[in-house]
Each structure stands twice: as structure tokens, then as C-alpha cells.
Amino acid sequence: MATLVTFHAHPDDECIACGGVMRAAADAGHRVVLVVATGGEHGEIVADVLAPGQTLAQRRHEETLESARILGVARTEFLGYVDSGMVGTETNTAPGAFAAADVEEAAGKLAVILRDEAADVVTVYDDHGGYGHPDHVQVHHVGMRAAEIAGTPRVFQSTMNRDEMRRLMAAAAQAGLMGDGDGPDEADLHSMGTPESDLTTRVDVTPWIAAKRDAMRAHSSQIAGDSFFLALPDEAFASAFGTEWFLRPGAPAGGPFETDLFSDEPSRSEGRVPSAS
Image (cartoon, rainbow, N blue to C red; front, side, top):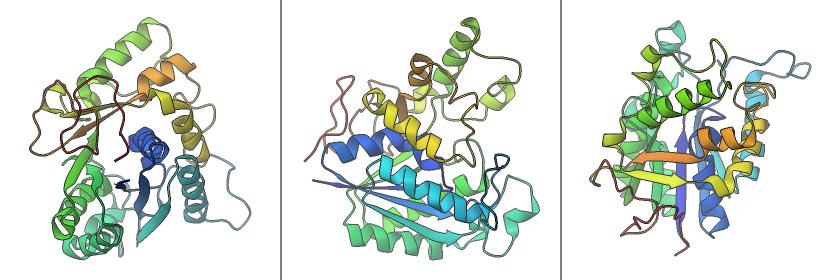
């Protein structure tokens, strides 16, 4: 059995980015640990979901614990930083904001968990945080440094396949599944994710797509039940979320892609999921 630590910026990031590999790893007998940097205090809240007197941070904490349960997480930790908000806002530099945190200090907190767990694998984000959110970029810097401090042997940078997103959006539009304003436009796509030629790792998580979708539903303060993604037919949802992409520093890029986060010599046969060791 190995240990996977997966590090994320806000509640709900975990299920969208890595929900499949988390559930797959748990089902294969690995220990899965979730670490969340912030409370998600500045998320765009779905109307009328908070209970009287409940703060958004409290609600998102509860939602994260439920998502973690669905995904087979053995331990969930919050580093205690404040959501920095979207790029260019005053909250980026507010007291306690994760984006403004000292990287060495934050990395030290995460490294304690990595060492305590004797982590075999850690996931972070790519160097632009997938789409440029200040907290996501900070996850990259803090996570990479923490792995260096702790000596974690395998580090994967979660990202999106920019070229696959274009292909999926074109197919969805052709099938009549996308209306005006659904999904990112071409200008946004150009700054989202990573070109396929730079990717190293592709994990097919379609066997765990139901758990991933249920974990997304658990974050009901952020993802409305009638939102575009959750309203997709099962087949279209699996196409959009059934593959999770990563960069592993030092691994060959552009394919054939690694498909196993745990093996020292990852299988390159398509469709393999993380295997117990």
C-alpha cells in the first residue's frame, strides 16, 4: 500500500481536478490524504444555500468533508489560510491570504504532513495553476517546495489538456449541448491548462466517474444541481471529466502517456489505473 497526498487551493477543487484518481487509489488499497490550503471564503455562492447564521467557510468545510468521504479519503487537513479571491482583487494581499503567504512557511506546514504520512506521491498544480487563480499558482509553488523539503519521491502537477478541451467543446456544440455563454471562450482557453504536447500523464477515471460526480454535488454551495456540468447527460459528463491529466517533472511529454501515479516504472498501456503496491 502507498500513500497519496493531494493538495488543493479551495474546497471543491479536489473533486474537479483529482476526484477520480483519489477514489481509484482508495479502491486499490492506497491511503489517500487531502490537504486544502484555504476555506474558500470568497467563492461565488449559490443562492439560498446557507443555513441561518452559517458562514460560507463553515459550509464549505462541511462540504469538503462529505466530498472526501465519497472519494475514500482517510485524512483531511486544512492549512488555515484565507481564500485570496480572483486575480487582481484586494483580497489577494489581505491578511492571511494564501496568495500572500510566505512560501517557505506554508511549504513547511505541508511538508510536516508529507513526512508524517511518508507520502509516496503528492499532487499539486501546474505553474500557472491551471487558469491563473492566485491561490492555484501558490499551490504550485508551495507544493513543489514542500515535496522538496519532505523528499516526496513522486510529484504530479494536475492540469487540463488544452487541446482536448477544444475537441470536447466542439463536439458538445455540435451535439447541441452548449448554449451561448456555456464554457470558456477561445481567449480563455488559450490561457487554461497545458498543451497536449507538454503533458506526461493521462489517467482514465471513467470507472469512478459516478463518485466524482457525487463529490461535485456535495459542494452544493458552489456547484448548483442544475449547473451546466452537473446537468450534462452521463456520457457527456464522462467525456468532460473522465480523464485526469498531469505533468510529472522529468517524465517524457507528449505521449504515449503514463497512466499510473504510483509505479516506479509506470505502465504505458492505455486504461490502467493506479495499482496497489
